Image (cartoon, rainbow, N blue to C red):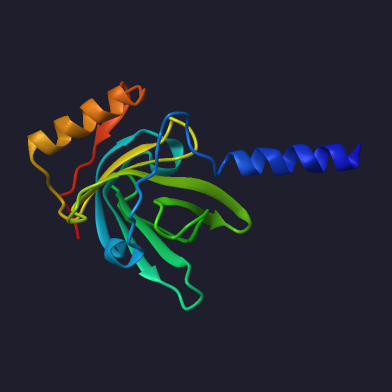
Length: 173
């Protein structure tokens, strides 16, 4: 029985690093070009970012080849900045935009880049299921055309956008 429970737990954890059906991670991904600061432009609402504005993600290379992730956002209700440090590693080939990221020890979640501009200025990211979706940009503001293209692609890929939040990027620094 213990072996069965361990197996089920391992399958459940492995599922968290999978890719949603019909979503294809980008190929030709260049981690070096992806490093640096990204601004969260839009996201599907979820508990670990609820109420945060001015959200950024900073990616730097670790000595072991993994990627250090610093997610930061402002909680206006509490009047303070929240920050989480994580570690991302590639699930397969380093030129495929499918990584797994951990903020809590041995537990990893999928990070799938399924759209990326040639100049690495905007990226569409999902998790292991369609409850997670982000539009990230190198700038804190994007044009309405960029936001609408993101929404159209998300709907075409089967995402439900009722809880989509356009993230406020102005306020206290």
